[in-house]
Length: 205
Image (cartoon, rainbow, N blue to C red; front, side):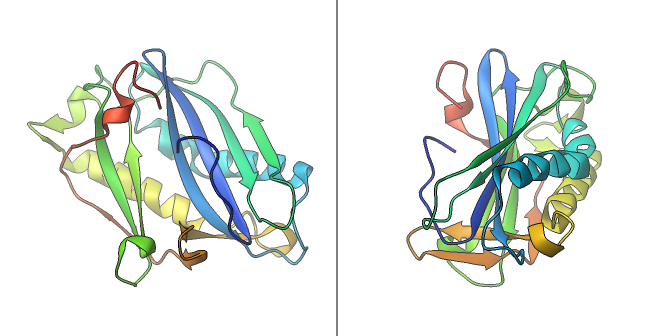
């Protein structure tokens, strides 16, 4: 995620912020507000950020090497009808990854592809996972243990609803061009190590 995201009705963007070798890493996940209230309050967004980390934090941390430190979680309300509220949860520090061994180069990433059942770029999302350990690498691929862990993480992210009720959410793929939030139905993870060049040291997030 670079800069301030644009806005779609009922859109909530939850982001995990980490640091690797002095550079920021951000993974963002889109959710649609399904609660019975008109909009969440700032306090509810703060709680949502904490609830999200409670739900997926252990799974996320196991994907990262020790040279990646997870810093905080944001829950950002991006409905155009009101102010863009930003909730925050600061993770107790330090919070390094727990995967053994050294990390592969900073641009190396495994990819989760989010599917909605519809074809086209507007209906698919991608998450680039940072901090792959050398112990999880086999040539230019990740091993089966890494895929198992990434699948568990993807399932946890997709299943997050913040408890439903007045503050409920559902995971979506967001398309600003089409002004749509499409419900995520599945995730696909292959073993190829991809590259996200903006994560190279000194080149941004």
